[in-house]
Length: 103
Image (cartoon, rainbow, N blue to C red; front, top):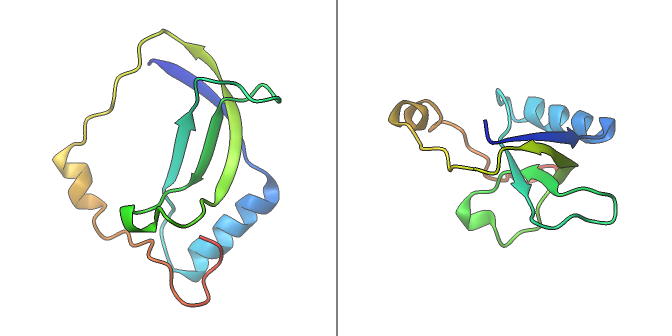
C-alpha cells in the first residue's frame, strides 16, 4: 500500500447520491479521487467527484468530498487494468438523461 487517505462526505451529498442511484436503477456510482501535491487552507490535499466519461469532461464536476493523505511510503504506482474488470463493468452508463440531478 502506498497511501492512506481520509475522506469526508457530507450527509446531504450522500443522500443526493443514493437518491440519484435509485432513480437511475443503478447498482452503484463511480467516484474519482485525486491527490494534490499542494495542501489547501484547511489542510486538505484530496478531493473526490462523480466520475465523468471523456465526452463529459467539459461539464462541471460534481464534488462529493475532501480529505487528506495521512500516510504514504513515498512510492505510488498506477493500478493496472485487468481484462476481467473491464468486461464486468461495461454495462455502467453514466450518460446524463433529461431531468437528471446534477451529475
